[in-house]
Length: 263
Image (cartoon, rainbow, N blue to C red; front, side, top):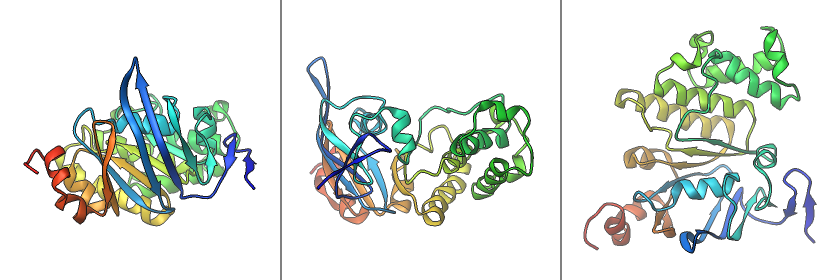
């Protein structure tokens, strides 16, 4: 028998780390997403690709609570979070980065991560006024900066980082919140080509070392294919295919819809 989930305010049922069932979203009678189904296994890394306007970011917005579904439901670790507010989803273990930076530009690299760690530990913003290098939040933050190769830039203002290093810092902030499922929305957006391999390595280590379930929207198809175990292809708001990278790239429907070749 299902039991209530106090963390997300929903009902706990069996399922994967993240399950999307018949999820739909429409505005003014226009269907942005229609009957989207995804079942993501614990610890899996999934790529979400598709042409512009396919509904990729809208899907992330509904999973994370920015938009509310017109129909269907979202389960996080078996708990129904379909109607949970954003902060409850975060408390339940859902983390997300956005296409545009959500960092505190006027705080240092360390302070950005320390703030996330402090909030996870039950503190608040006032603790940032008197940071102590030996406290638990700071130690945690420094560890996550090591994870993303930014420990040497701990005292630099976040606003002064390159796009690639900002993306790494966003991942460190997420790690400090200890999510079980992470949504990466176009992590390579604005990143210099020379910085893409380093950021890809950070994402690979995030997945490997922290046992996180990761979903990644990304336009760099070579990056996606080099990182993920399965790929979901969205086209016109629907899941066109969901399979391993080799099968996806050989699918004539994907070649037609995403790559622009004839089926």
